[in-house]
Length: 366
Image (cartoon, rainbow, N blue to C red):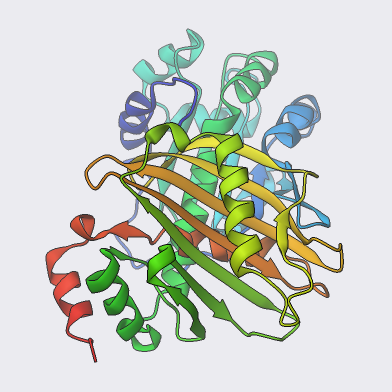
């Protein structure tokens, strides 16, 4: 994802130095906890000072259309630290030199050179995967004072949030991906005929295939109270100038008016203006616009959340729109749209697909 500039390479190096003495060689058990829970280890007084900044960073609201927190913070004191070491998302946060047990612990695992960088405000957060458990992300946030930490939390909020989102995406994809239940015959058709690949779960159906319109629609649980839709649309010999938020909204509405219609043809899907956002991101190495928000039927008879990635592929001169929607009116949908997001990120043009994988997929052509 495109973020504010931050010396992340330096942080990665520091993380290796910082954590090396803590990493055990024994077999680690799988990390526990909900994907959207972050277990925060902080001293009481410090936490109350830092809480507003932490909530601003991690408790962002996602409208599905119900308001749901992106992450939930669960705070514990240092004396409960050992019990939280098996969680998926762990955040240790405190200033240096306070004399508290937590502060002493952070100082004990920081190299003197790292402490010097922290005190000079040249570094303030470090991450380590699988430190005490498999599929775990541990983040340490520190500084010379609570005020400095709070400032940096807000200044580099997207970097901090992205670290936990990326770890969560990786865990979720590993749980969703199952070669045994993968629809490789559909994947092979896409790869051979259209020159791109997307992971197709067993319970998705190819609901629509329109080669003349460069459009395919994958649909899960049609006519149920928990539907999921994915479409891929592409424009050959496109202009990269189309990768802008206004053009994307116009294009998506044009596509859904044509293909996302009710069975009686009385209404169709369009983007709701409520809570819509567009953001520049890195989509598998491509500059892309991520569009997220709510869709609705034209007659306002229903709706739900959607997420869409639009990017231009210079090598093939194609504009791609990869889009996922949820229709589940009886349920909270944050986790469903997260799953959809992870599935969309499996998309790759053919030339980016590993050769052995491509051969394996294509061997399933009927």
